[in-house]
Length: 560
Image (cartoon, rainbow, N blue to C red; front, side, top):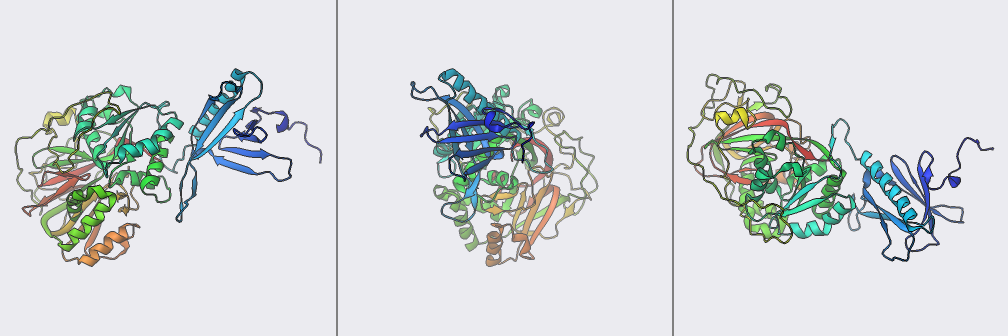
């Protein structure tokens, strides 16, 4: 069959665009081995040129590419130049079932002529084309609106060297640092030195110098960063700074959630870190709901993960003594607490999502309406008292030579400025769904009849820990608080079965009559037991009455 003369012959169009970018290059270790390489908008295709009829071909999807760089050879006598592309495709695990992202590097030698500068320019042209095409092929979920990080993205990375088993910094050096270099992401590393260091730093930092703030730690460090941003006079602009998370702690709930939102297969430990590093390098930004939480002393916190009372909070705080063993500390804490299961007394009320007025995403809401007549759930008196302040220092331009001191995860969070009426007008989003804590809840709220609880958990992400898939249908910006509570009367085996089922997100299918799940926009919890623990994002806070409201899309999150 005669070939159409209008169709270009790729063999005559080497190293140029013919619908695709096409070139022939040699192997980096053996000049006698040659490859034909073609770049399209979605893939890099590599074929080994051979005299045998069969040609081996490898296709790399550009959604898996984080970067490409051109460089000269270390040997000054080599006139050739090189370009190296870095991919993280899903591949089968070596020792277990399933797939996970694994690093693949593809390097080619360009030696078109004897002029090293001409060869380097050609290598740079290929590297630039691969980078540009891979940016356009970032993995996006259907129906999700993304922004993109500017490139190059000036990133501040805050590392808590004592989170988890104290391995955050080595993990960063071994698994993340090289990936950021491959993706051409410039960053400044800040090693936190004490509790609230990160909060003080971001509260005072010149955020115009940064395009993203990334946390390498557990969830507690991000809690500090978010509250530091919300305490700034320019909080509305500051909280729009894209936030990223790299798992370096014990729980790593948000990191596991972000990985889940990317629709990737389950991953843990270093595999989860690699996945989150890949998501960071691809640079897509989505919305993140924040929840405003009011304590009895008029302190106000902003939360991205959870509010817990009872069993979950007890395990979180009491297992701190097992921190050195890593994530298994939660299993140990669970078994210890099951052995002496506690029941807490209190009152719980919530505003169902279907009853709540529609809130505008990422905006400041109108002031709350006047309190309605009392309902069944009347409020406990406010426990007024002076705020105690934990003095912290702010260090800028921190580097690897800084000396870190131990963070104390057991300290109760007390260093939050009270919100005044003038604050609500100028420096913080208004909680239009919440009455004052000294006021009864409106009639549109649901009051839970039970007053004996084993646990109450309000969560706004899919995962409570790496291996606890708590809300299978949740997203980071669904505008919901997912409220779970377990009433008294549940047996120890039944409670254990719930948490074991939660590893696969199957706890709601257990048919447990003591487990209740509601989608809400706001809630109030009033403990009447004299002692107990309440946690926000895994951090212990003041024990007493607390209420919360979701603010849809208030922050921005680097996600897939």
